[in-house]
Amino acid sequence: MSATTEQIIEALRPVEDPELHRSIVDLGMVRDVNVTANGVSLTVVLTVPGCPLRNEIQNRVTNAVAPLAPGGNVSIDFGVMTDAERQNVRVMLNGDPSATAGSAQAHGHAEGRAIPFAAKDSKTKPLLISSGKGGVGKSSVTTNLAVALAARGHKVGIVDADIYGFSIPRMLGADRDPVVIDNMLLPPEAHGVRCISIGYFVPDGEAVIWRGPMLHKALEQFLTDVFWDEPDFLLIDMPPGTGDIALSLSQYLPKGEVYVVTTPQQAAQKVARLSAAMATKVGLPVKGIIENMSWFTGDDGKRYELFGSGGGAELAEELGVPLLGQLPLVQALREGGDDGKPIAAVAPESELGRAFHEIARKIAEDNKPRKKFLRALRVN
Ligand SMILES: Nc1ncnc2c1ncn2[C@@H]1O[C@H](COP(=O)(O)OP(=O)(O)OP(=O)(O)O)[C@@H](O)[C@H]1O
Ligand SMILES: [Mg+2]
Image (cartoon, rainbow, N blue to C red; front, top):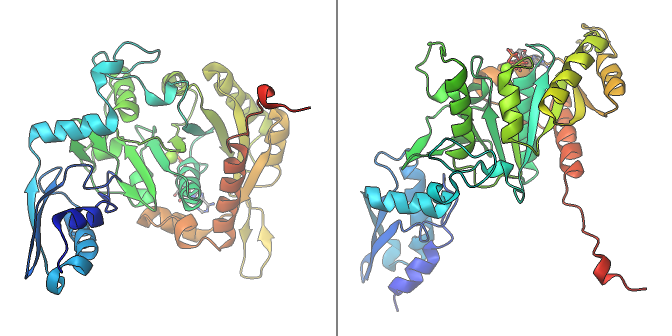
């Protein structure tokens, strides 16, 4: 006996849209299921024309339906949603902007929605990765830490807030442009991490020439108009320094915590003062120090401390927070950053890969939901 239409639909229910991470049945993407003696035919309506993941969807659908199809034959027609259908999908996934506009603190652009991460009941922990000065490895740490947190099963996003010096799409290997569904941006994803960056919106080789208000608007949109889908961790690759962007971000992300990346030689006092100043200015706590470029291991197996030693530990002591890890200098880190192959993903067992995973473990442990102690349930 051949399968019924309902059975085919049930078999398709667990199939997720690769970008939206929701059932294609629930999203209304499955139509015209027809079972005949010769096989199953159906239509899949894509959210946008030229959907870059069409082949992936085709494979998933075929694999789900083939076992039930007479002769294993599955024929799929592709269609595209209408504007009204897209709007439905956006509202279903990301809510109705007019419902929250102006009603909450830290709400987004005038006509827009509230910033979800500022809400009291937001379960997302924003991790702001910052440094006293540039070039110390903030972006490399952000990328690899995000990958390591995702590998632990967390839902993770990155906001590249380094508007002038964006580098996350390349480092993460998420260089496909974001798909837009009815003004909702779908963050490109790689190694289980979603990210958004100004890099997706400026033509290759051109510099960002935006000034203050546009930058803030862009950042706000990164938080409100991107479909983040309630990640556990949202990492922010901060621009260097203690500028305005840091200030706005802290208002947008009042539950954020700051992690400072430093190298071993930096005069701890100076960096401590800068980092502490930043934290005070933005009113967010510094939760840990990550020392980068700590040593280089030569072919002789000896550790060479090219940039001196002790900077991370000193800074940690100065600020009264833990030194979460020391990251060696490794050529493969830079190469992986240039090729979109983060070392935490491609070489998790290497010395540096392990160091990133260990820092991720500490941060994840620290942010485990605590058991609530309910006085009312106490039994004496
Ligand atoms: N541990 C390391 N081993 C080898 N190369 C590293 C290491 N950390 C960072 N690098 C390299 O140093 C350069 C600067 O690192 P990165 O871009 O992560 O720093 P940043 O603090 O984000 O810089 P910026 O202030 O310019 O944004 C990159 O080319 C990166 O690949
Ligand atoms: Mg950077």
